[in-house]
Amino acid sequence: MIKNIVGREKELSQLKKFMDQKCNVSVWGIQGPGGVGKNKLVYEFIKTYTDDEPWYFRIVDNRRVGLFNLCNDWNYDKNLFLVIDYSAFVKDTICEWLNRLS
Image (tube, rainbow, N blue to C red):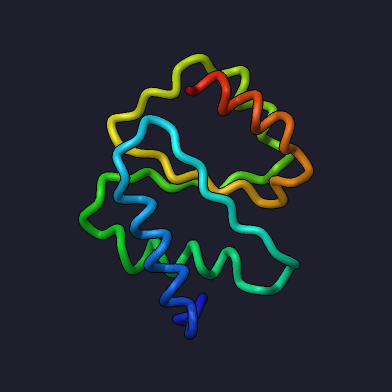
């Protein structure tokens, strides 16, 4: 069970502003060493801000990112909030995928 996080109000507020933008493709990166609370921040955001929002949330291991480029249809009836763990290891694949989306 993930407990409420303390001291991340600024980051949560910034992420909320970002999510409220109306863009076809938007990217927000969160990086830091293991154990600093990146995933906790995302979970807290989902729990706090998305009850009435039309979002799909998915967490993907970086080893599965290559599959993104196999899919030609990324149309959803809701927005997609995608978390890619250890994304720095597959940054070229992510860039290629984002270029296809934009």
